[in-house]
Image (cartoon, rainbow, N blue to C red; front, top):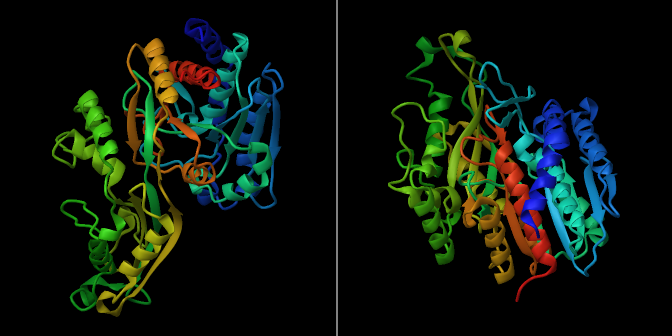
Length: 470
């Protein structure tokens, strides 16, 4: 591939079309079904689907077919096919559903209010993962402009990823003949350690999430009359969480929720630690004086990539502070999100968490854990020499720096599904969620300069796929 020529085309596409399309996409509150139970009636997922599909249909790509596929009662998927000149298949993946609003956005920003500032597009979903469909077709256009031989491409853009991709297995089965047996899977929904080179994801953590409910009374009572006799439901919940997690270190205590770390992954993360140094933790928006877990960068990367970790992401039964009176509340609900090592089974982990939390409840309280999301993580197969060479060549050509291999702390359920379905396939999992991009949180942004370069790198890898060097 002529990288300079590819860069000109891709840069022109982002300048004339893609950025504007993403600005309009950000405005659509296409929250994933888990966060919008009335998604069908509200119509935002359908609006986002048609918004992206319309642009895709307009692209001058030889043989391109674009279809919105719908199974009754499930979120839609966009399926695209481009015929190839070599007898092989590449599957490219992305998603268009979004996380909910979250609080804490800067005054001039908002989840559905796109703002371009300092070459960053702020707003929910542009980086996670609205850009994927546009970048995938831009890469294919770059190949065809240079008349480079390429495999058949199948593009799959789903609308349920942020809810654990629970609709996806039905579509994988429904579309199995059209997908075929890809030898390469490209996923543009992952992270980046910096904005200076290609980052290849080698592993993804799984997840066991759900709601812990603790009830001790049938109704709230005066705290002065009851405290000291009636235990606080919050304190009971805190006791139960301590069965899972050491509150001082954050270590998950159950050994069967942990996994051994492969030597190759440890060495890859050691290289990342040397490359990023303090950037491993400086990427986050700390308050003044705060410090990270872990004694040094490698330990922090191992914590994020290969060790279980618990977060409390929501609460119920707690009034707002300005409405909190002297009442001992009858119950407390806490939303728990347990990230799992890549090789731990998500469903089994959810069952284990339920067992730990519900056994022998303190004070005979009514305790219930309701799992609502479970996902098994993913550990990449060994990278083929041709793919490593293609990634290194493209990263050096575009960025002037080598590609790096790093695990991610998040979950992409689709990867585990594909890993089981296509055990012989190679995987290029990458993305734009770099330092302070803050996916799922306030002030989420897409780094516009980085995404254009990454787009060129992906085109280079697709070109190399059709002509691998032995």
